[in-house]
Amino acid sequence: MVSAESPSRTTASTRLLVGALAALAVALVIGNRVYRAAEMFLASAILRLMTSSGVHLAAERQSVYFGLGTDHAFGLRMSPECTSAFLMLPMLVVGAAMITLRPRVSKRVLTALAFAGLAVIVVNQLRILTLVGLVGWLGADRGYYWGHTLLGSMVSVLGGAAALVSFVWLSTRDPKAVP
Image (cartoon, rainbow, N blue to C red; front, top):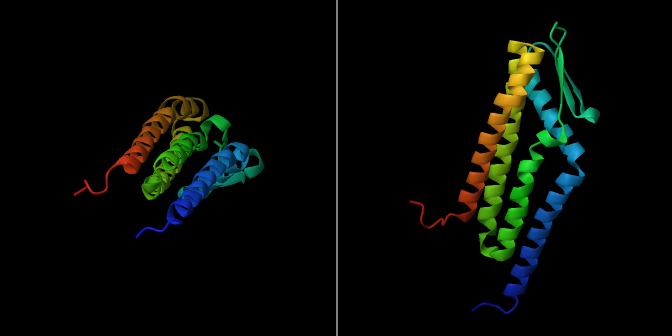
């Protein structure tokens, strides 16, 4: 027998979860500078593992400098348009809406958000590393052009699209229908 209190607890937990997702979305907008600094921190850590030349993180400017100690030192600043936060934001909003409308899909939506969110972060790091590699290979002007304007944009669009498709598929699929 189902208790009369059960729906109100579910409703309260659903409201709490939706509120947490909405708060996270707002935090990404308000705390975008901090988020970008964290993205550049991750990029600088990866670069330190991959290169023998100097790497410097200027977190207060959301910038990473690489190739230090060489003739080809270069710096990248994470602008608001280039952050993975703007690909995560719609997923958080849609996820909150999905949970509001169908609370029973909460677990699937949260799993999908975790997977797609991680994918978006990885894709953005791959874009940064592509840019760094092309600057090192082709020089500052041509490498930045090809790495930022063309290839980096392709990495972001294709990776972001794959993450969004994964989010929708994972959050809407019927787990009973999967063999």
